[in-house]
Image (cartoon, rainbow, N blue to C red; front, side):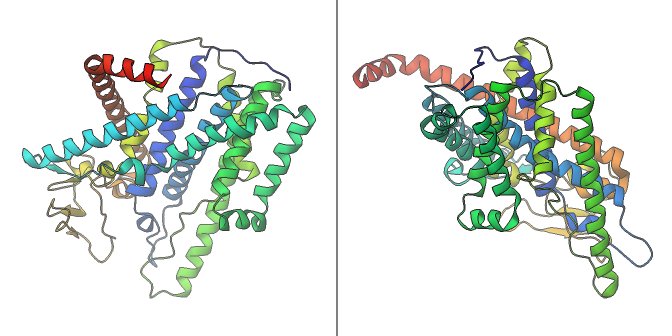
Length: 415
């Protein structure tokens, strides 16, 4: 196998890691904090706003692209390594998982103790029951260490490319993909493919002669296909609605138009990766430091704590002045007794369960302000995640200073 490995990571990939995490945050805001049926609201006098729906559809895609980019980066840097250190990232992620769970549990307690107009809860076992991507990510690294890298190392360039193509074919035909799904290994196989593609790019640089404008064209084409396909699906749902005018809502049109193993999706993700690999920005300390906090950001915004936050009184966009009228109001912060009841247009609006109330911002204030609100939330979540990363680092330094001699003696006894 041809080797072309350098030791130093440039900040262009760290910047890509940051943007990938921002995309994942946007994706989770859409799937967890937007009511899709609200966008599908239809009446005989006016149709749904396609522009709103198409915008949300593209934002939904960011999460899948972000996950793919993380695995591409991993394959790019780990391919060809004989001694992949699995323990270091594994211990680091476990450390952050449990420390963050404890910190968030403490914050939840303080919310109630000092009667703060926020409430939530946390679970010390979040590290075991949640955060699927973390375990998936570590599993791919372990598999690469003991199996995949050795296998790929025995392949020449042509055989390596054939392996990628065969894996792509396996995932591109629905019947074969359904078999993988029934075996519950579809995500694992996707991870192997994406890791292998990242390694192939590192070793052979197959896109070096592809013009930048053509890479951009691939991304734009992917977005256009998403929008057109989505519009077709939405029109189908609207037609079904008009066949049964007694129904209040059409079937939710919000679907995953192009899922991650599709060839078009992979081309888009690889095009983004290649564009960032061409950036020559050197090593920038700030970018590298922020990139180091991305996993803590993930742990925070995908925690039970964040998912179950409630705010007393009125939703967040009303408190910020983005919305003047409240469509939903949280009446009780007690998770066991709390409820969300409509106070405006009860027959027209679906009750929104969360305090972010993203759907109403898009519906009432339009796409521009809706996107601004989403960007504001995304940056705020990322910033809070960095704050928790700093707290975790402080706790680790404190523990190290207190138990340094104990750790040192324990390490000696295990050698």
